[in-house]
Length: 151
Image 1 (cartoon, rainbow, N blue to C red):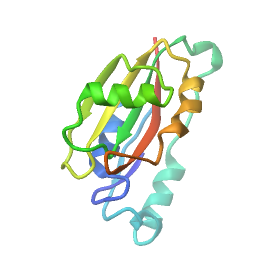
Image 2: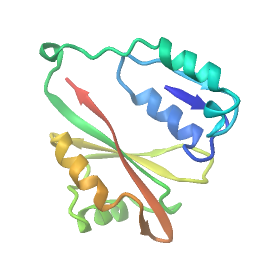
Image 3: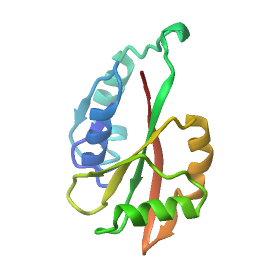
């Protein structure tokens, strides 16, 4: 994963938190600069690092049953309660989450990680556009399906 250390668009804190939750194989490359620097001043380093990463998928027979799916809901209003988030999701046809974790950061784009147990990942991906980029409580909310966890 390539992360810019002063990214204010794909916020660095959130990217590092997502990296921590990602499954192996994974590799972190921290680049100097902001969001666009990997395409400009850090292009040589970013290209070299991306090209040298051995992205391998596990053979199908090694994958096990998905036991939960993680989603990131970011740029929510500071102080929004778990019950308000659950009601928001249900209002737009998403299932209630099973677990919620508030993502630490600098406070500029509060976020939560949502865990859905025994939910089909494709179903969540189909529902995600219902709330992605929606304005809620004065904020444009971003909703991303982050990872599937295998048992």
